[in-house]
Length: 504
Image (cartoon, rainbow, N blue to C red; front, side, top):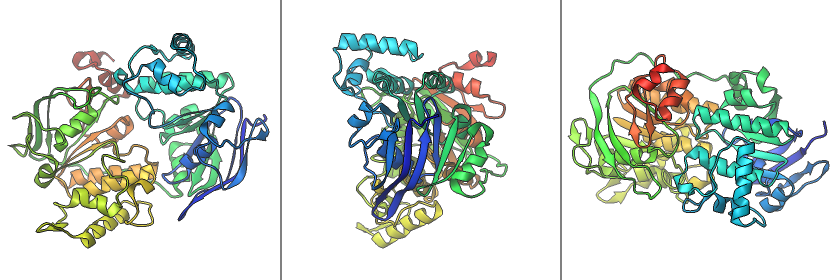
């Protein structure tokens, strides 16, 4: 079959790194094609060239056999290329229809556009009311807005970057049905994901990148997830393990934690009670927007808690701020790595100083010890295999996955007694994800208590002793992960607590 899109010898270099090195691949009409690679392999740069965000230094592209060289996303969309980004670009205060109109060329009047939205959402099984305010939507519904915005422009190629990272298992099934329908109608899909079992279930072909080069191709359904992961990283993967641990005394206890959200579109916390013991890993799942950010803020000290609701080692710490809680032994790593966990324009050394100053002894009598901070940053980079020219580089210069490794490593190496992490392996390749999970397990083995908030259910089942679900700011009763099924977890995440889950 004639290729819809053909790339030949695409090369793109930045100072100090070749992001793409003579990359060639082709995608046929109706094909679901996976683009795989570890963090920093060059996936993002490649799709940015296809979508007109980046201009290649060398090489050519063809669409339907004709030269294709978009100078901007508008030209790519006009040629039939749509893209759903990993990070949504929506305005919370506007309606679904208003958001979609902003992303269209020559958008029709809102009434006519609303009818088009209803028609497309019905056709592709993506129910969405055009007059709803985006700030009130779940993460899955927000993704539908982005997809429908693309579909209204009748794309011939749809690029999807980590589309299931914020979805429940049930929402993933709906998305896959939509993508299969689009494929059957002739729309090609270029699919980026680190969830390799999803790749096996959905994709017809896969191209694997490593260090900017194409290192292999495969048929996912005929290839195991481990085989694909090892092709990506070029080595044998190890599975995270830990010895059996005898749990110790209670370290952290929440007693009826209830707090409003600081954001107008956030989720208040409602009567959360849970305790955590030495050596324990508690996994907390939930669809994005159900109170994860608020819970981390209440634990880290970014939001002060009312008296009597947050206790560390039997002491009420609700009134303490983040630095005081760090000194006391409670550390946290938020989901948003660039801007919240790390200052984008600061160097890695400066970012190491920001949270490590007290526990790593990087300050004395008001003076900051920058050589010691540099040494701490170097230790993070070496221990967690952060791919960067050096600790003097700005945080924003790292790929998302490498910055994630730096952020998690920075907190783990400070030897917390309690560590709370939100989405610890979000956007991280299989090898790095395994390393991060092993680091969390090692921390628990050494006696720390760890809370892992994640939308990756496989991750939670792999490393957690107990599981609880956040839904509309409420936390379900924690349950042992032994024997807990994905279907039960999906129902808990959807708000079915207690006896309702027993009938699954």
